Image (tube, rainbow, N blue to C red; front, top):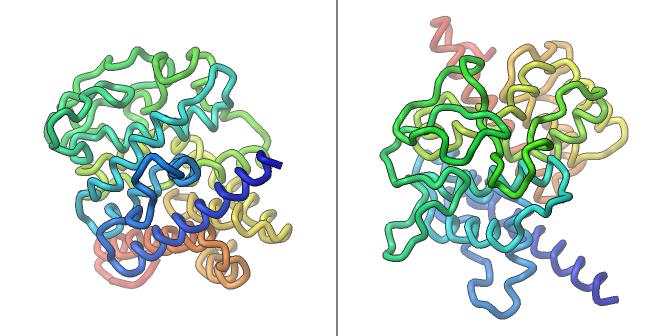
Length: 307
């Protein structure tokens, strides 16, 4: 009974926090976690919700082009510290924890308050300027690269990812790329907060570029057709959360089949599943990213017509 009640409290907290994030995305609010319990009494379910939403708590900063609110950063850091992956955790759990820690430890996300723990994240960042560390691969030693270099283009170096000291033994850090498309779509849906554009100034400034250059994102870029198949399968199964998450990945990769009709598909998913704020969050993010890509494509070809 206690476990059931605890699960219900966490589910309620996830719903409320996702609603706050959606509100911040749509309304331009400065903080997504402003409604969270900040004291020690009763904040367990809320911190669990932050852990489950992961770096999406900081997504409004990317969408609105400004530094993340210190309250949101502190929530992410506390959640990562409270719920680290266990030795037997799945790769999805390890990667989601890495993403949350990576984002909350980025120099532009780290509060300037005295006593803030340097090195709270996997790379023990030293408070360097906006630039990010060169990409490093899963299983590489923590802190193996300096923090002052900029992110190389996709595919030019090993990807960002968890390290030996990130709560894992290294062997399970590598993303399982060679899996059936059904399993791929399911796993990527669980890691939808990593589906962000990495080629914008805001992404580079506030750390989201690291998520876009991870091994998870690389696999997604390599298998857009399989992602599209997963999107269609989720819609047919009326799994609106997985469909929204797959659609979000499709919004940030190239090679999406034109016959998929992603824009109308996202509208349909939102219509059918939008009562779930997590669905609303992923669809809103996907539509925003699609708009960014279309605007960029229009500037490049000089037409201004949506791609």
